[in-house]
Amino acid sequence: MFKINDNYLKLPGSYLFSTIGKKVNAYAAAHPDKKIIRLGIGDVTQPLAPAIITALHGAVDEMSRAETFKGYAPDLGYEFLRNAVCENDYKARGCNISPDEIFISDGAKCDSGNIQEIFSVDNKIAVCDPVYPVYVDTNVMAGRTGTYDSVRETWSDVIYMPCVAENNFAPQIPAGEGKTPDLIYLCFPNNPTGSTITKSQLQEWVDYANRVGAVIIYDAAYEAYISEEDVPHSIYECEGARTCAIELHSFSKNAGFTGVRLGFTVIPRDLKCGDVSLHSLWARRHGTKYNGAPYIVQKAGEAVYSPEGKEQLKKQVAYYMNNAKYILEGLKNAGYAVSGGVNAPYIWLKAPDKMTSWEFFDYLLEKANVVGTPGSGFGPSGETYFRLTAFGSYENTVEAVERIKAL
View (cartoon, rainbow, N blue to C red):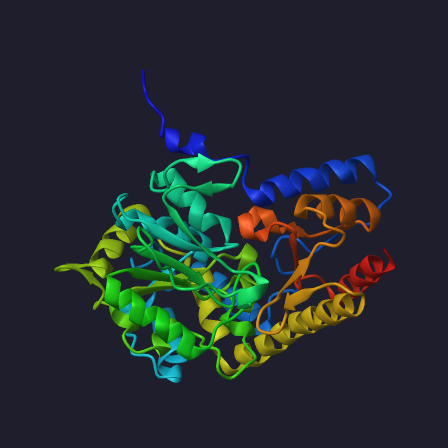
């Protein structure tokens, strides 16, 4: 009789956003007359920028002619895109990254889950709490997290780094016996709290990782939303990051590619376990299990870095951040305790009247027909908190805030 990977059976419940979808769909079916405004899942709503559309059309035309047709993409991704990424995201910021250290993929979510495959199951992970669920769930699937405590909603072999109001929703470096991690997941600007750390604070993490021999898996999916000067866009702005950090990037939020799918992972050649290069391990995994993002999509990605693309996407990011400002100020004026919304498209708020986060979810859905994300779905420290996104239309954002204020 065949056997299954029973680590999957350890996962409590369904994936957070699947649960939300089921609850919202059930409510919508029972109340077809209600206009539901969805500010829960971080999906964009504005159309692709004109420069990107032009690039897509051009690439489609190329695929119609034998002399310009493209089949399988190169393992690392097309050189034109890796060069554009290198010049604009790294060299322009003084980061020592080369094009052959950039791996093009179909999105940061896949890479954030798949990257753990190149590490032993004996490694101990550390995560911010609250945290993007994929980091923990994929390590559960691999058998790296130990046993689940259903009361505390924690895993025995995971180091949780609470991000709470008292520390401005920024993690503290782990301390204490048995609290030295091998893999450290960091995401800044943070999902779900919208918090950030300064370059000097991030340098402390880099120094710590190099000192204890840990690897930082740094999710920079929201760097395009940074507005403050002292907030780093890349971990490679820090000295020593080449020997301890892997960086994940996405085109989903900065360019609206949630339905197009494109991202990349950076692994410097200096990052090694003894004599073994993590770059070579990921290159082998990438080449074996992945056939590359489509040429059409990679050409669209190149357009993101064109002068026209940069200008158009700057306006698009500003559109979403104007939504964030409206939510932040509107809820603050209504008496809610809120944070985020300055360097990130997420607003993190405290549920009122001692409600749990799921109680507040139901309350908002039923009383205001507004959908958000319960904070407990991101980890135990997210309980009693709630996430709203700024990715809706401006009109729907204004209406949602007014509905919540009216409660």
